[in-house]
Image 1 (tube, one colour):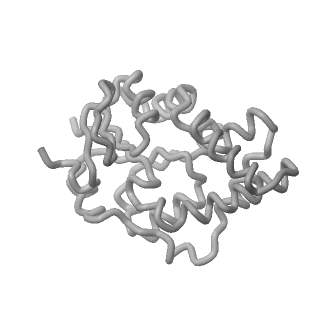
Image 2: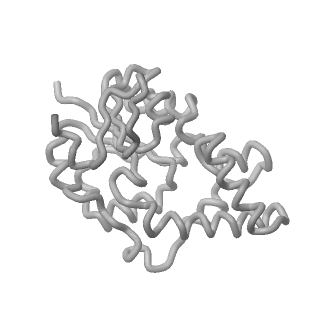
Image 3: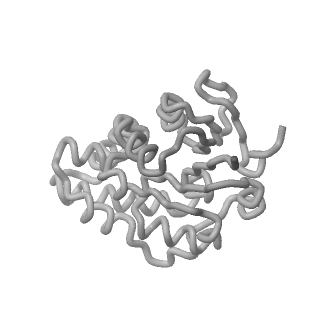
Length: 205
């Protein structure tokens, strides 16, 4: 039986930190500032705080302010010159070709954004399924309810899960998944099965 491969999207399959995340973060700051009637500086602090506390800014805004998730995602992830901002990870296609078996995207990003990234990277055909924030009822990784919905939807018993956020992998380990952490950190938590610094190292030993 071929294995199941689960991949995060941002900062796993493409470098989101360099170009597109700063733009999304600015849009989030503006949205929060407008919706909650506060300064951009205060909004930026809330955005970062909620990301750390809940796994996504959106999750915190829903919980604390009942923000409309569809409106929030539309306004913060609709971006001009999208194509110029996407940087695929080195050897991305070669790595996906080596991941023999079912491949699934599991991301906190919205569907339209995710589909654009996959199209620009030229990797839509490599994935059998795509699970976005809408599919988890706007509950984001590392929320255990999000992971439970994901696992049940695809009836997953065993799989390799590749993500750049260790907290997401900690939740995945509770469901018995094999965890691969894409990071430059020097330490390795006990719930991490493999640590790589480049996606292309996924199949190196």
